[in-house]
Image 1 (cartoon, rainbow, N blue to C red):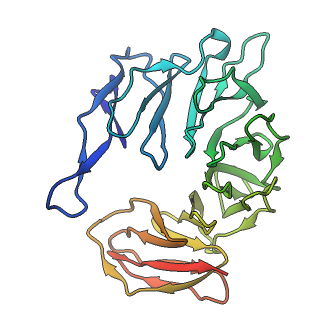
Image 2 (spheres, rainbow, N blue to C red):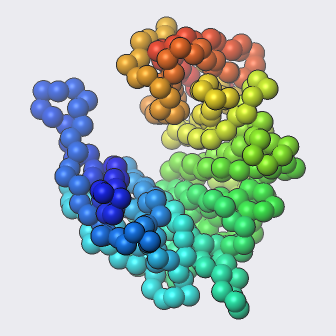
Image 3 (tube, helix red, strand yellow):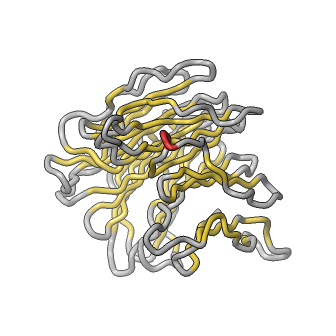
Length: 342
């Protein structure tokens, strides 16, 4: 699924609808559809957040002039007309994020706008199967909340991770229950750019970058929550100490709970750490891409297959947990990693 700005004035969406006959792995994108617009020059929308589940149900949220809106598309269907997630000026705000689970539970989080009398709030509205979105519930104060991410397990349990002025936190809501007390995941330092991934079993990985001063992240940290656990384990540093800034971490997790973290190291180096994993690697293969496209991975039958797109003219390293030593790979190459947790 992709989103485009048309003339910087329209928010539009398209989705993969199939493959071309006789062409291996060729995706066919649907025509774009305007979800909202045309926007005034002085009031463009925030960048949308999009999520989909294994059944192909896609949901997009964004906010424009303080109103959080939603559009969705089931597999084989068309995008719906956009609607407000929950009406009322008391819930104006943004930015926003969305997640959807295998059971169709859909959660939307956003920060409300502070007024003279009411402080900002970090709120979540949840739509359970067969119901509409609930009245938003405050999970934490919205003051100095810079970014936040959602994940939904197959049983409808919703997890929220966020960054505020005191660090990275997480809270969980099981169906029929209240939100848990926030758990602080980060320690001393200056964390930023948190991200979160949750699998169907409820296992989760939260990641963020952290440094000893603002704007100078030196480490990537990750906190793991096993399936069925009420809290995250203590955070661990997963990046190699290269002396360069390490930033923009992205987590991945398989159905069995195998976890991977991708991040950037320095100005151009892409590094991947696979935690607690015995690794085997295939021979490097030529990549057609030139330039960093980021760290991407897919999971297959409980293993992790990690693909790296590499910048032309640079060499990069894959750092694996001891006792495995780093493996160097060269420009225009992809190293495929696969293995299972101990």
